[in-house]
Image (cartoon, rainbow, N blue to C red; front, side):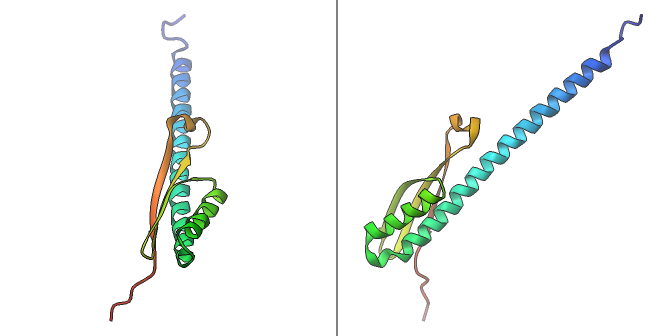
Length: 117
């Protein structure tokens, strides 16, 4: 019997383990990027919704922003209005086992378009 008999099986097992690790890492990275995009989209939509209701007051504008973030399954961290602009900050929890690593957040600002004379 040769001394290196069965070494191909060990190398193949190591290669498969490496590919499984790489695939798992890429899936987790994709899930984290998806959560980040969801947070950014929710912040943009909440700021637009709040800016649309600024004329009704700060409470109404921030209530509209909370309505949007609740439906997009992200948390509204802060909402404030300065003149006619709405500033919104949201936080999204990472999915699955990534949740123990924290969350991701995003900020957005929306307001009327000013025309120059």
